[in-house]
Image 1 (cartoon, rainbow over the protein chains, first blue to last red):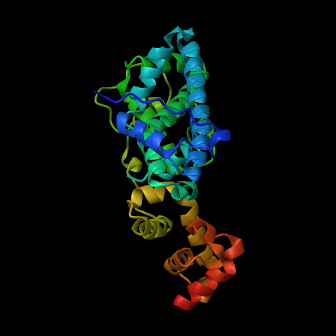
Image 2: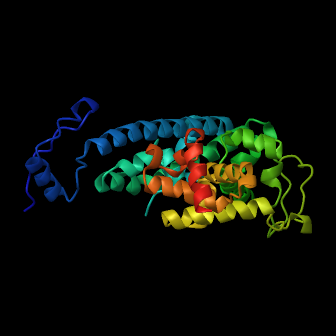
Image 3: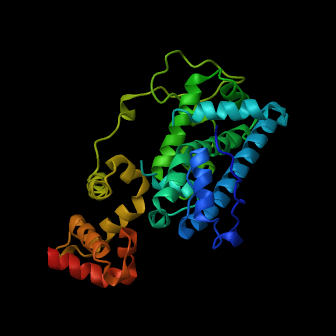
Length: 92
Length: 233
């Protein structure tokens, strides 16, 4: 039976210095087969990176919406536009 | 595998920042690198195709056919432009790059980079100047400048245990700096290799507080760099 453990709260920027106790997070890691990042520098850099990734996602989505609208006259073909773009860049 | 500088850039990180991370932290970045590179490439393709689609009715029609998979030969040309842009490692947007290099229109997309398997079908309206591949299109022999860049990329690649192509593609600023510094100090008997080795020695010994090769090549460390390069010959 997999062990049920309480997931620690999601870390936010203000929590960086207050990571969950090692024992608690170690239990979650063992139960879920994942590893938490514990050092503060990595956590801060991952948070910074997440912001950049979010911005990249947003721009990508905006560009795909615009392309769908320009080419097909509607944003309704967003998913097929995005799939086509993925196919096109597949060989890059 | 270590992410490339581009993979880090897409994730808003510099190499120096990545190097500061613990193994667990690096694993997070490494694991999402390839997916995020794909996303960045999608964005480039989107920017390029949007520009072409907005160039007029003909452009819009072509882009529609490319997206619907009806034009594999043009799709390959889009990929070729994306690859070329990524390899050029320039600061300008892909839209501007396409404008500067190909005039921004359809030409580079409908022009076969190599003989097409089938003749290109006429689009909505005939496209002018569809040029077939000719012997002049053959890759020219490598220039002395390119040979130097390749040699410096080789030094970088060996130092960082990565392949030369990726060093050449992603570290063009370091490569240019090494070449510029050695050119400026040719009279003092410096070579590209002696400059690079001096920068490496500075990093290894944390001399002048330097932690990265790029940093060692900055003007504020020039005096120390040149002293080491000259001393080591």
